[in-house]
Length: 110
Image (cartoon, rainbow, N blue to C red):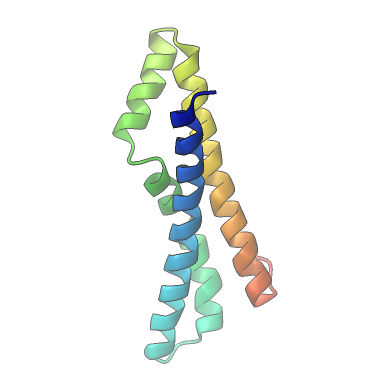
């Protein structure tokens, strides 16, 4: 594997993990400041940030769609497989972040 691809995998994982953890913690702090329960806000915000974390991690959709098109239409399966693996890496980052938040609040997050 080339070094740039591994770097992309780690970056994708880290960005999606950071978006969920950071967004959830800061969102729950804002819930505390306005008088809502930060405990309830943690799980609610974490669930709503899942898809946005994946989109942020893959760097928008146009580059991803272009690489997927290149893989499907041009027959370059290498680009197709790399993009799918990067998207899966972002999904794993989201799942790990949700598990950490679930561990923190001692409640299952769906």
